[in-house]
Structure formats: C-alpha cells, structure tokens
Image 1 (spheres, helix red, strand yellow):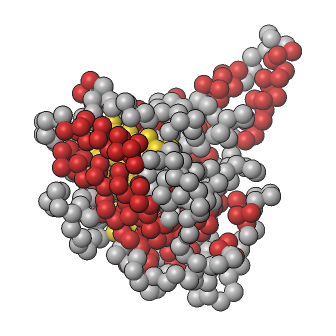
Image 2 (image 1 turned 45 degrees about the vertical axis):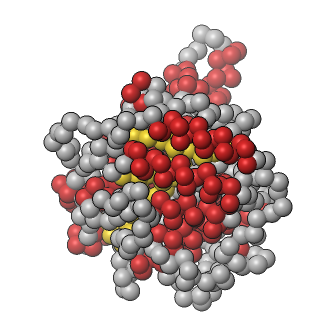
Image 3 (image 1 turned 180 degrees about the horizontal axis):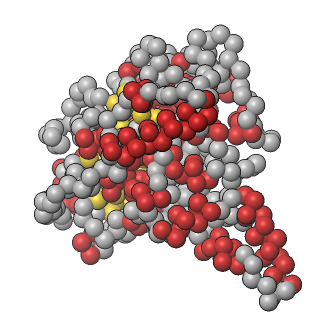
Amino acid sequence: MANLSSPASSKQKVAYFYDCDMGHYYYGPGHPMKPHRLKLTHHLLLTYGLYRKMDVYRPHRAGAEEMARFHSPEYIEFLKRITPDTAAILSQTTQAQKMQPGQNGGASLSAQMQRFNVGEYTDCPVFDGLYEFCSIYTGASIDGACKLNQGDCDIAVNWSGGLHHAKKGEASGFCYVNDIVVGILELLKRHARVLYIDIDIHHGDGVEEAFYLTDRVMTASFHKYGDFFPGTGDLKDVGVKAGKYYSVNCPLREGMDDKAYAQVFKPVIQKIMDVFRPGAVVLQCGADSLTGDRLGCFNLSLKGHAECVKFVKSFNIPTLVLGGGGYTIRNVARCWTYETAVLLDQHNSISEEIPYNDYFDYYSPDFKLHLTPNGQENLNTKESLEHCRSVILENLQTLQGAPSVQMHETPPDFFTKEDQAGAMEEEEDADRDRSGKSVSASAHSAAGSGAMIAGNDGGLADMDVDGRSDVSINGSGGQKAAHPAEFYEDDKDNH
C-alpha cells in the first residue's frame, strides 16, 4: 500500500462497467431521474476514445440473494413482483376497498407499496423493468468490487451505481437498491477497513445508516444541509457505539464553489487517510453538486468536482468509483466523462470541443466540455467552513489508530467462475433454441465477474441484444433512437 500521508500519482489500471440497456429505463414523464444520462456519458467516452484505455466489461445482473445481503428478502421479492400494471390494479383495488371494506383482494401488495415507499405519490415510482434496472446497476458495483478484490484492476468505474439513499427495507430519493452498501460488503471480504466518500449534493444517508455502528467502514459525506433532502447529515452525527467518530459529515450551504470545497475536502480526507488507513475506497461522484443542476444549489465546475476524484486517486488505494445524482443530464455526461479522463490521466489531453456523437445536439449552444460557474453567492463563509473542518479533524484525532479485525478465511466472491460457467451454458442453450446455432463461451471472456466486451480495435462495441450497433463513433450521421427514455415533455435537456 502507498504511503497515505503523502499522495503520489502513478499509472493505475482502470476497469469500466457498462450495460447498454441501462439508458433505456424510464422513471416516467416529469421525473428528474433520467437513466438516459448514462448513454450520453458512454457515447462521450467512446468518441473521446477513452474506452480504449480501459478494460471494458458488461456486468452480470445481480440476483435476489446478492441484493439481500443488505436489503430484506421481503423487500427484494416485492421489487421482483411489482410492475406498472399491478401497481395500477392495486390503485383501483384500494379505491374499491374504501367503498367495500370487506374486500381485501390486493391489500397485501398495496400495503407493501406504502411500507416500502414505492409507487404513486412517492419519489420512487414503479416503472417497466424496475427490478432488472436495479439488478444491472447493483451487479456492476459487485463486479467492480470483485475485480478490486482479485487485484485485476486498481480502479473500477460504474457510473450507473451510487444510489445512496436506499434503506434496508425502503426505497428513497429515486434509489431502490443500495448498490454502494452491497459493494462495500463485498470489499469487506478482503479489506479490514473501507472508506466511503460522497460528493453528491445530497447526504449519503442510506450508506451512513447501514454502517453507523461499525468501525470497519468510515463514511464521509460533503453535502447541502438545512431544509434540503434528506434532512440528515448534521455535523454532530458521528456514529454510535463501535462506530463513534466513524461517520463524518460536512454540512454545507448553497453556492459552494471550487476553492471553498477544496479547502474543506482535502484536509478532511487527508486526515481520514492518515488515521483510518483504509484498504479500499468507494467514491460516490454525484453530479448534482455541479453548477446549474436542476435540483442542486452548489456552484462547482467540472474541474472543481473532479479535483476530489484526482485527490482520492492520488493515494493509490483500490477504488470503486460510482455515479449518483445529477439532473441536468448533458452536464452529468460532461462531468463523468471528464472524471473518467482524470482516472486515466488523460484530462489534460482531451479536447474542450465536444466531439461529434449521436447526442451532439444536447450540448448546444457552445458544444464545450467544461462549465462556467454562475454568479451565485457562496453562503459558506470562511468561519463556517473553518468550524466544520476543525470539529471534524478534532473528532478524527480522538481515534486511536486504525481498527483491526481478526483474520478469517476469505468468503468466496458472489459471482464465481462456476456461476459464470453455468450462466454461459444457460445462455448458449437459449441462443441455440432461438437460432439453432451454438454461441461460443469464449466470446464472453471474463475472469470472475462481468464479461469483457471487445470491438475490433480492442475497445467497446456497444451492441444490443440482437447484435446491432448501438452507436456510431466515426462521426458519420448519428441518429437518436426513438425511445421514450430520451424525451421528456417540456424538458430543455432535450435540446
């Protein structure tokens, strides 16, 4: 492990996880969460050529047992059962039951919708493919953690992950399955201590709650606090029992700019590295802390946001990098593309001009990569930031060295080679049934987790299930697919 007290840059192997189906899921009209942003990001990575410098994998889809490592089995079973059709029927049944109390046809599932905070009148709607959506992004985080555990990469990137609000038995804040917690549990199989860092504008409440009682995971969240969702993350919230002082919260006010953010982020993370000495890091890079976000109120540029990524990378610790919030989707794509370049040490060489791609019009009118912060006032005063910083550093100083754990035999990875071989055989059988042709398992070359996808040039050939190309990367007349996930009524992000 590198000397944590003196960050140093070095060439690190990066693995990137992407499933082309992710961009097609649709929360519904008017909903601010848009999985389509992942396709915009992916196309920028392709046209900038960054994919050629990474190992690119299609993740496996997490099963119910994997997601139930953190979530209650009853909740995961509910996510498997619920569909827009059943939700609509339940809504009608509920109305009928009000008139005829003796009838209780769908009462159980209807009660579960309320209990699990899913459905109409919540911020977590039921949409087509909900369970598969959760399965894909959670599988990608598990695969990234497995690759890190196996030493197959130094940095694993899953921009579809980072859904930090989901609780053990409850959806929250557009998040259904907490892939971060599941990924951390995987990392804990090999690492005595894992550090979670959250630079989303919203507090990482679901992750903090999951590890509030333990000293094996330290959570550090830098977020807007005060009359702002989810309302948690006070400076005084530090963990309890064995986890006391292992929850770090830095509550901030609106207008946060690059300079002020770095002044609090860097000394806090440096102190955590010195005291906690993590074996692995999970970094949630929610892009709603950028300037101009539809739901955010910070004023960070791409460079200011990415400076956090660059600083964490400099410690040379195995790192799982995840997405998160971000609701001005053209800026989300800009941010995660630039931060991928930072992870690859390519940020000084990529062009400021957005390269032509299938979603080029989204970046009008300037078609530039970087954002210019607006004139918003920074309500974080020098005194308020100094208070946060000093309290956090004082709390960390009370920790008596890095906690240790008794050594045990390492549990197996979720997605083992045997599991993968079985999945390949099933897939071959299915393909043979459909077409009468055999599919070679060698086309799915992967060791342990995720299937590596290689195009003719060694990069990603973003193919959908029937083998048609999903992207043009040569700049010759790309055309948007007419999928509802791309179009939002009265939404300026379409232009």
